[in-house]
Length: 451
Image (cartoon, rainbow, N blue to C red):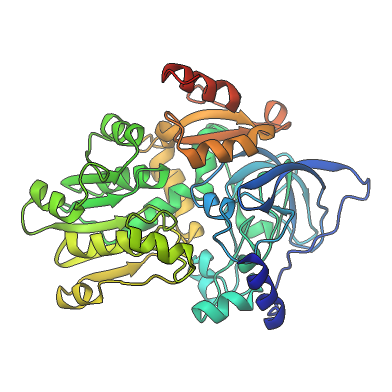
């Protein structure tokens, strides 16, 4: 798929943008450690050139904290089009300012900042409304425009379909339009509370706000990874009377029950999810359903075959379950990262029930990150660290991808250290101790009696 997608993208060419993914390198010739993609389930730590100020609005960051996101697994499995060997991954990261371009007046070297996963110009129609993920001027991919009719903003570390920008699972990152795409972090906020402002905090908040969760609503959430857990918490904060989480991983189900007190459904145990939901809430169904899961794991044989034969890129099973589970005139939100086409969507249920189906889109981080920081994190109303289970060094990223993909018991969300963490980072008391993936995978295997 990657060969064909890249060939077609080359045939289409690129559209002009205000900023560009190509960058100059540090004149010293020094290199940095970074995680790069080389193929399906093949990611490696490489020595890569350190980026230099290339455009006048650039900022160079020393990365002090990074992480892995569930959507990174789509890259790991080669399911996002236009990946190229050597692409540096990672779209959730923070650090300290190392260098600034001549046009950057609001930041200085040494300041702690978090980056938004999207690269916004700050000036277009969408950026003026803080809809940073919809920026018109930073993604050069005509392949995305061919598929969707328009283009998202450019994203860090997420394929050439989103601009081909080098990502933040690295020791240094070049941040285009750094005066727009970096948020200053107060000294009182430790890294583990600030890092997720880069993506999963605004993404989960957006899913709940955009889908319209209201006081008294019953809400069902598909997928209990970090975004699903955060969405459940936001739904509670917005006044949901009842939240039901759906997953199949025992640890995640137990984690959600323990941390949030929500009800859960194991879809390995209950094959008919709409039926089980109605057994819990009554024949009316839930008011709101939100897909925080994944498209790359079909449940049924029919969709396993279609996906294997590439007759569809995405799977509609969660969407169909949501359409059947909500009440008449209910609301369904999709924040899970779908990429292409799915067969067999129950359009009849969508129309006949009057369901409001909302593609939440990539979350506009700039619309929410100050609100979340100031009103929820600084006030203590929302502690993002409740999902944080592990802390590892950058060198362990290849093993971490494998563990995350295998859903190793006990693993929910991580924080990743670089060589700059000790000198420039600010880990707090709620941050787990540094560990190695091989050690805690071995401990899990021993606890389960695996030789």
